[in-house]
Image 1 (cartoon, rainbow, N blue to C red):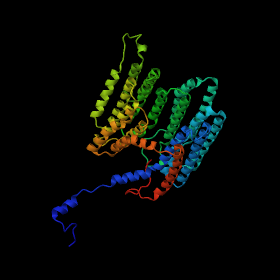
Image 2: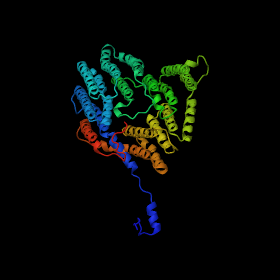
Image 3: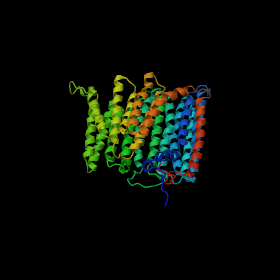
Length: 547
């Protein structure tokens, strides 16, 4: 007779031990698999490089002149970029596709940053700026030539080289045009920057319609062959060019205006509608509706400039009318076109209407009531998409109130993120794909804003992460033991103590330490990328997953 387990124990104790639930190790395995796949060393390396360059730029004790600071920062970025491309080719030859694709995108984030430094150098030494501009263009062409030649399987069509060349020439020419304008008239760049923001950048975004549309079919391919790589790369270039223009405005002491991004945002919104709607249809049948609503939100960026807001709404109405003529189902574009016309009318300044309609006045009551209705609907509906709608509406509502009552926009961002994190605790049933990414994104945004608050005045703002974080932490612990909301709240509340701890660290210049740490982390990331292939990941044994 075979021995039975726990045969020497009493029957009721043996049954209790057998029926006792076991602790699942799946969350730990999943976290470990994600950590190894993402290779955070590369990301932290790039962040530390940018931070080190920034600290070296503002540290007067490190370099005796600003010219030397610019040369050091330019050299660090370009050397890092060459190292990135070399590592990309190394990883591609070893067929470590995920990390090669990751470094490819990091390079595209950093590729135009040196031209921002040239915009600063052009004020200090025009000759140096011209030299750096030529050198920067040459290095960009060299790096992308190497990637195109040695990373042949990368989804980087030849038309991307044409688009990249256009954007490169614009970024190289902007500093020289800026300097020439200073020699003629200090106020000339303000007019030229308006042309760049409201005409040049939107036209560049419209050129992106020449790229292929993302298809609805799902294909299991390696990370470097994903169909969305060209569009994502193009959007990174456009974003970097916008950052370049903003930096020139900062050097020129121009007042920052959110309305400058409105036309560019509108052009990108319609580009996304044309290119990714079919791909999103794989995840939800509501993708066409969601994407068509996106351009409707871009005029909100131009609330400070009624002319732009009205013009963008009218353009939206025209495009929706064209869609009504081309689509069989005209209901959705017709409704959105009507909303655009109503928004254009409501955004007209009172002085435009009062000569026609005496006593006309539109207050914030209508907008507040509409926002309140959406927020109530979001609270009552336990779905991820309504949590997102409620968070966005809450953020914009508080942002508008902040302008009238003069309190910080940080309240808007913190409370909007808190709204979505708390809303996620009450979601029921299977949610649409991307809901987890949504929670992680808003949690990350909450943490980043909390770290930004750690150095602002007044002190009342510094305790805002505790006001929002404690309720999220308690609710997440009591209701669902949700890891992401608890982690986001905890990190958010640690921002202030960590900031005080960091301020106690003295010694070597922070910029040099950060740059050195960046290169150390980069080396660790490369070693980690090569080593991790030998490590079995999870029960399935898959070593490479989707990017």
